Length: 391
Image (cartoon, rainbow, N blue to C red; front, side, top):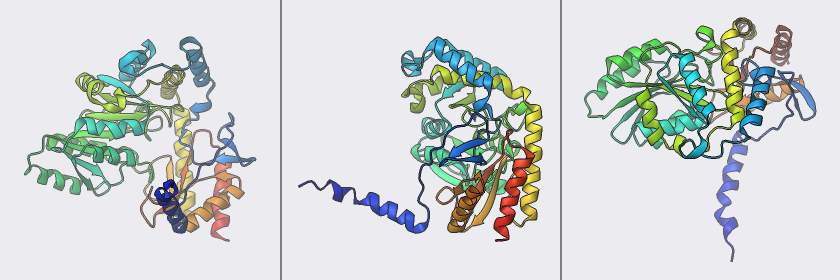
């Protein structure tokens, strides 16, 4: 007798529970439109207000052309992991360019930010280590911390007194190393950490600092090179290419010794096929464009302030956002989904974010502005929020 259905009954039970809680998620496929920020979803043209393509570089002609030319010259795939035969000259050239651009000793490419975060900490910490992570750190960082088998303690969000208290107490124990883990811009709230304070505490207590710069990169910092840029005292600085770079992949900025160590001990780097040439070409083009996009960044950040102020005036709660990520915190999961659906009827794609991505009672519409959004489109979005408020 085949009892496989019985063994898999837990699948349906878990999904049914998500349905009951109003938390079931599904995939929504859309048709790409090179005229960003438009997309076609369910045969309707919508303005996308939930993309991380902050500078619109995924559809930039130079980025597309460089991706195509690298594919034509080097092939569709790298063919192997970096340590076998997957390291093309273009991989090393890009790492050298990134190191030079960001002013770090060395750079190592990864296939995604999640892959880097989930595999770096297990390579750099063990059961004799301590990891102190901001409570709102990305899930990938927390998963990496758990996989390391280190003792994990989470300090209250951006609460550096709490972090220092944990550091002070840690000196009474015999840890082989202590890691402080945080993000420069938090992905769900859009607020920023105090990177200078984190560096100061790491130095003061002999800790190592891992700073994830994924959502600042391209938009914030000198020349759009992020909030880790030109900061001495960051042991590992993560940047990603799937957001403002408009492509895919990630990189770590670190010392040359750290790079050599990770090549030999980081499983997420060792056991995966190297990034394909087309991606390397796209990233190379974006790296040349980003420092020159000051006008786009200025306009984007002006629009951010305008939208935040408008939402606040309507009585919505945009939290403590200091970036292009603007959370409209609703609270109720059902009402958040209803609002997302309503916005879609008005021509806007703005996803509902619910637990477990955010804490219970903090469901929200996570709005993201890009350099491609016009003030007129933002005004139309504000009008839709106004109508919902007055319904």
